[in-house]
Length: 509
Image (cartoon, rainbow, N blue to C red):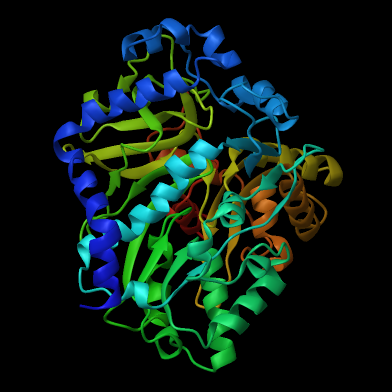
């Protein structure tokens, strides 16, 4: 029996049995989680304002607590950042995950409590290994090192011992010491803010180690792997790390990267497991390599609700009579906006993601997109409001006028090169298209911190490309779909190239 099998029997088998209870006890588990969250928050300001002291059931929870977005909770979170205790969650929250902004903010700051860190995020990391060992009991994953990519953090305002930054950096900063013995790189390198230097250091220290598993966002990880191959003068990561067997990936869709990874990790033992981990929580893990759907993790400190997308207004909020349901009332095949309540103080919080369930008992789902148009091919989370503001600034600066536009990603090649491609029909063209593109790009970086991070030194995302559209292109496209006139609109941003390829084909005629 190898080391991994011994540790699996000692530490992970019990957890695997608990996860097996998802099949027959989902409603019981979720109701228990909600009661636990309500009880823990009874002495908070939020709990006092929403009758948590007398609340005993899900039905009472719905009657007393409204559905919220970041805009509704922003004032509470700001006070938490300033050091106030017992606001949305018990005690003082000292860590805040910086995420992409809402309509009115460049960035939003998601509270990460001690309870949430332990009972959501770290449970997710542990269960990735638990689920993988269940799938692959002959694994040797624990006989080597884990290469885990992370971001960086900075002090939060003037609050003592408080940090704000990427969720991954918060996790690394607080990870148990035992985990640090098996992970690469060390904390000093992992938390470096300059990605160029971090990538160089990671490749330098990891190239001669026994790496058995890697974790991170596909776009960032690909950049690191290319640097490792460059140092070792090879085009196959399996030559560098022959015992590498699994990539735990999340953050953006993996399909656009799958072929590239297959080309640079040519190994029969290699596996890929998708995870659904976000600043707001850890929600899902792929537990069957033949099934792309993920298992919803229902016994963390997360209570789930779902609003059918048919009941969502065009402003991204549920309509007045929206039929919001708990997990046990969802329907297979229906598209839902996800709503969560957590031990980080997010109450009936719309995270902006949409999901579709593929089965019940246990509940498995796929991520179907966002509640609004967006591009998130590389973790940039560009929304339509960002695009509109960026275009406005470029038009003001150049005197141009935009009639119609759409944008989509060009996915990176083996050299980790990628960009956004915009097709714009101008009613008044700028004097210089390249100048317009530069201003638009800079404006988007100023508006959206995630886009700014991905554009940093052209490491992951290259400068955007603008293709001028011929006059009437978008009208012709709508006409070809039988949608010209009325309330039909051009899809401004898309996370795939379906629409833009059709437009480019028509533009060349």
